[in-house]
Length: 156
Image 1 (cartoon, one colour):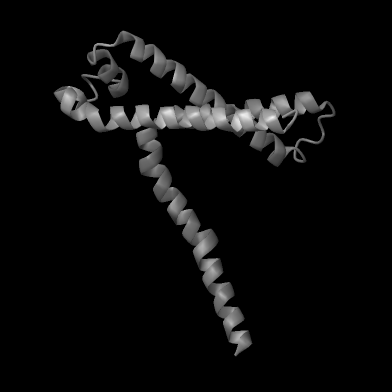
Image 2 (cartoon, helix red, strand yellow; image 1 turned 90 degrees about the vertical axis):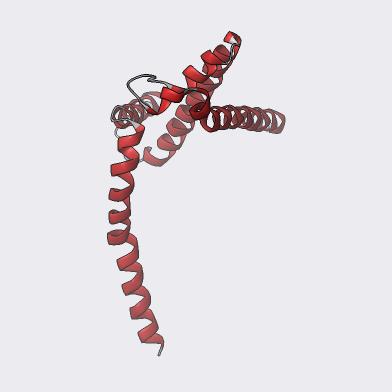
């Protein structure tokens, strides 16, 4: 950001957008089962949140939700791109032009995110969390246990 005031404005705007999104998501997620009985059947209603908003009788609410979700996706994509560019800048140092380097990193990261999203959230959560758990055991728990154990033996 250019100065401290612009940074504060961005933080406040991000906070307000996040709070509104969380309220909207919580409202729809906690209310949709009782509003639409067929909602648990994915073949009947493919997008539960949009079905709820359509049934509430306020068509403008659908547009507000779409706008807020678009902002949420854009801010998440911008955060991913920025963090990825900082993280992988040295890896792509062979690209001389910094703007081109950042564009390449961003396209790769967003491509990976789109590829992961194509499997669907349910599949990612079901399979991904168990895979990450097993990887965590191998890469974190076992080494930490062996290192701590070897260090405590050396101290005694």
